[in-house]
Figure 1 (tube, helix red, strand yellow):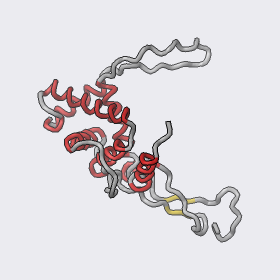
Figure 2 (cartoon, helix red, strand yellow):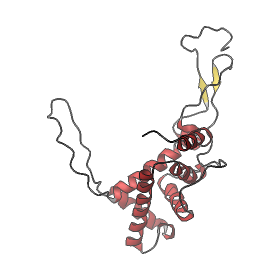
Figure 3 (cartoon, rainbow, N blue to C red):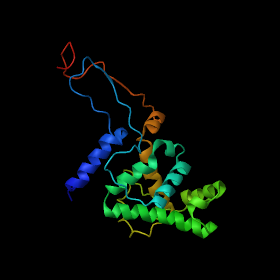
Length: 208
């Protein structure tokens, strides 16, 4: 199904103003020679006027705390605000999946410690995350190698486990963090894009 214009415009605004690290910086026309300095990506959660959030304050505080516990440095990188704004532009199904994942962590916290995630002690948070990350997923990975019979049809989907819910949150958090300046630097980004030559470019003075 095609994206509606409002959702597409919001994603474009996010990509251009908040998540610069999600795409390679574009080279502007009219630059001389072949040396280009890429603009630093904006912090993932930088404020962008007019872009709404999706989570309520308690949910946003919870995901901020979870993000910091899963990927240290997420608070400074603005992971929670960025995830919140991406959720606001996401599909209803994916929004429900995210809320279900967040709810699963809260339910596990209540079951284990009789209090919500934000009220847990550091040791309790570590215990909960260890349990979530080592729980059995609802579906084991299936592999095929040449020479083996074709894999049997996929079994009917099983209800998501705590591990499935945790993995969803972890993937969203990691994606947001590693699209921030801090995350990109951890991956080796230096802010420099140097090109000795561009294929097909013969202009001695650069690009006209």
